[in-house]
View 1 (spheres, rainbow, N blue to C red):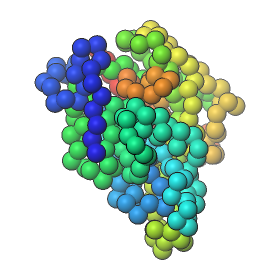
View 2: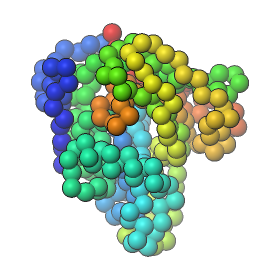
View 3: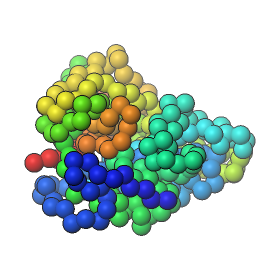
View 4: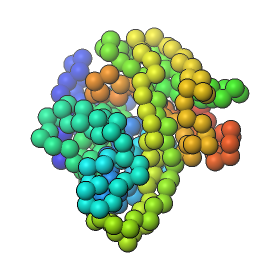
Length: 262
């Protein structure tokens, strides 16, 4: 399944049209995998997301959903908010149902997370789209700073922030994956809109007390610009943290994976 959403501002989206590259720098593309530990088709897609997470040009996140829990295994990372996000995409793409593993590229195209060729092709097509710069950094007092550059806003754009675990291994005792140890990557533990973006540069400061601490997050933080009702992601960036309390991995700081616009 590979869906494409039409035209924005006269620009064809993911239609394979030869559009000019707007920046010589590598652009980071957002890849969102909706997955479940209760789904036998998901481990291969989870491994693929792990591969995507290693790329400098991709911000890869996994959202666990719980509608496979009835098979006998309750996914410890599933949440109602993750399902709500997937259902919002379902409405955008006009699908009759939600499914796993579903992979959404840049909020604009969805396909099976096991369709490697389609995913890689869509990521390559997304890279030619104009985008805004988004970075995530942290101050000495522990506050997160999400910086968004200049660009074109449709008026409903929000700045979103997610905290994620970089990798978890889970022995699964029951269900379709019973007897296996599953490995999941960049697992979203919480996310929410933290502000609005009107096309002008903005820095949004999130106090440490208002977000999860590093002792709760063994991964990092990702930020992106997207309408409140979802749709195209105009920019994304991330930072990772090490597992030491209060520590930042110096090699992966200040939005090392970010969208660039010129």
